[in-house]
Image (cartoon, rainbow, N blue to C red; front, side):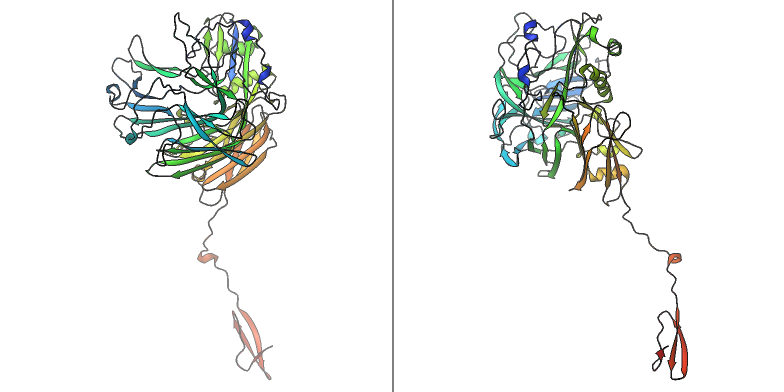
Length: 574
């Protein structure tokens, strides 16, 4: 059973599919520990999972992208062994790298993790780096630090003594970095960064083979493959991902390889993590996170344009919705939508692929962001009684993709710097940064109204934006900025929420907490009092009034008129 495609027919016994999953209950009664979404491999089944994307290919790679005669105008992609690879020197073209980051080997190392720490009940616990995982890298390249092409690496296990979970005290840190440059440029610029921290422990994968006869044993490795179009011979890249947690399995791999799985456990509640990363250049644009109470610090270091980025925040529970329904049980609305291709933007797959929905098995992992994903979740919520399947305690952050930034305000898109960070614990959310319309920043989120244990789900929203960017949007001066944050439900009614606003060290912090789902809209209105003082003109000079007094000396009297009249010597004021 290989993991690279939804189009693979799975062979699982019904007994394993229907195995009890009562062990996934976390200690506090919320489903988290070991949760695996239902994915029944039965004809006529519809399997939909609303959950953040699984890790990308585990192995680092270097590619060239460009066009060539005979590719019908389509862009082709070659895998490269180095920047000197003959396939990868064609101009025009673009070089892109992907790798994971590990512990910095020295104080001047770049594109590495300087350190990670945790706080529990105010007590700091420093993370201890253990080892990279997996050790085997199927696809790699030769780094070239002079070109800012970092070392090819896997992720790593870290130990936090005193931060125990059901699998021990080890945590898998998945820090991924992407960069790009044209063939003519001399150095790469970092384009995307993602960082996730998982409570995890190693577990053997067992013996798994691919679907073809005499397939080799699958050791769980994830990697990229060079492929070619049969007709045009256009090169493109295929991906084999991290081994998935199919229904009936007891492993939820956040990384796999070396015939082992880094299986996920529930992170203890209310943990604050702080991660410091040294980067050869700053990623651009916006970041989105699954953490609460964020603090972002960016400082320049040598050699320019290198930066030290520190991200601090508390874990947050993100509701997951896992659905496996028969086609017959779907509402007519859902049948109509899926029979016509489904919701835009969702990558639909199938098993026993057929136009007959009673023979086909539909597999759908909607992306976490975008208006279409929000609508797809809202369409399913009545079928799950507006209740989450699991609430996974999460700590993650990533840069927004180019597609998510499409249409964003130009002030949001200043290059070579992080312009803002947006955090929410909602299942789905608007793509990109908040939309700026009619003087208001708006952002929509959607999630089940109830947590997996039946309690009301409480929303979190944190917006951290560079002060200069906020002033750019509104055309403000350098005077202090005031902000008003409101949460409006689907009926247009204002919700009660805890709102905090502040400005510190060049960043504007806005927060709305404790609002309820299913699909509220968060609105931020910034304002500013004028910091300028009017200059009086000649016509507005105040009128000076003269005063007349009477002064006497014996029987003699005199009147004196002036602005500040005084009696002559020897005279007294009457």
